[in-house]
Amino acid sequence: MSYIIILAWALFYLVFSFSSQLPWASCTNPWNTDDCVDFSENRTFNWTRQMNSTSAATEFWERRVLAISAGIEEVGSVRWEVLLCLIAMWVICYFCIWKGVRSTGKVVYFTATFPYMMLLILLIRGLTLPGAMQGVKFYLYPEPDRLSEPQVWMEAASQIFFSYSVAVGSLTVLGSYNTYNNNCYKDSLWLCLLNSGTSMVAGFAVFSVLGFMAHEQGAPIEEVAESGPGLAFIAYPQAVAMMPLPQFWATCFFIMIILLGLDTQFVAMEVVITSVTDLYPAVLRKTGHRELFLLFFCLFCFICQFIMITEGGMYVFQLFDYYACNGTCLLFLSVFQSLAMGWIFGAERMYGVIEDMTGTRPNPLFKLCWLYITPLVSLVSFICSLVEFQPLTFNRWYVYPRWAYVLGWLLALSSILMVPGWALFKICTGTGSLRERFFNLCRTDPDLPLTQKRKAELHHTDSREQMEVHMTLAQEAAAKTYTQLEMSLKMTSRSTIVSST
Image: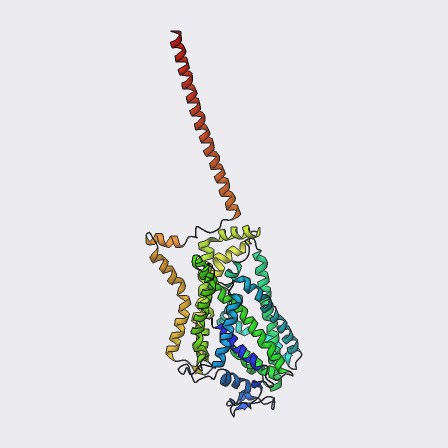
């Protein structure tokens, strides 16, 4: 849930975007140092080649927004302005999802569509700037030599997992609110097209502006481009400050960041709330209980994030993001999820469910993916990510103390150990022998909904059994009637003989 910290920073920038002069565009502010470079006065100065020079945008980010300390050991005081922004973001998130998907769905109509308008505006503006093509070429030009590096493939796999929210429950939770006969093929296709298309267009919007900044500074784009928070809060704001009407473009950019981030935060919170509600429906589905649980959840997350808005909070944020939210954890979870779906729930049963929902039987290739390809690729990627793992460094120079790395691995294990930990708990609390408990856990729940085909088979079986029962009862009744009739005839005959005598 650390993503909302980024939204707090974006809101902080958005507020300052309405200033008469953008504070990250000049070196005349109280927080600036003598080493600050003002590009509005000297745009051709290649500051990236000067070891002791920093840009105005960098100093605004590090000295005004973060007031960053010398290391994670120096926590420092709370940044109260960022604290207010964080409170505002949590309040917005709470009231947008407190009534469930009914309220979230209405909000998402705006938060999911308006950023596309902002993105289109920034794209058009970026492509019309001088030097934009330099950035576009850098964005599109491949480096085939790097395809032999395992780390490239690991980063690509992690990006796919994060962008599509694979193995974190988001797609499962959102899909659970669809009707049973919803066309999942159509949804999956649109999801892939929109996600990839949006990423591609956003790349053009970002790198065209970075090309403009490289052109203005007379520096190679490799020296201008940043990654992570540095791209959103240093490189892009600095480029925007060099444009005409910088306040307008800065406002558009940070509104887009906030709205896109809110959508991500909504889904992440909905995953937790829906999962816990499904575990304890008798308690949380009562009137007002969901809202109360959501309030406690938001307060708990807010308290946990307090340390991330201190002067040393950036070091904690990077540690949490690098270890607890990395692709290695997602790859590990995907191994177990693919095994559970393909081997425990069963590929054949999955075939039947999808056919029952859509009326079309899946391609046989899907069965190979569920059984072999997906688990194998996930397992190999997970192992490679461990082999190629590099310890975290901040700003390419700060090395964390040993205890911080231990804390980072504990954060990573907090999600990884949930799967074997829960399995061990269920085995220990089950009934029967150890073998019986294990095989009981590898069976599907008996309360899973039946497909229409299975219902028809059971109905046919029940009808046949009922017919056989009726026939048996009829035969028994007929035999009983025949016996009674035979006895009556014997009694009548005996009475006639006695009367004759």
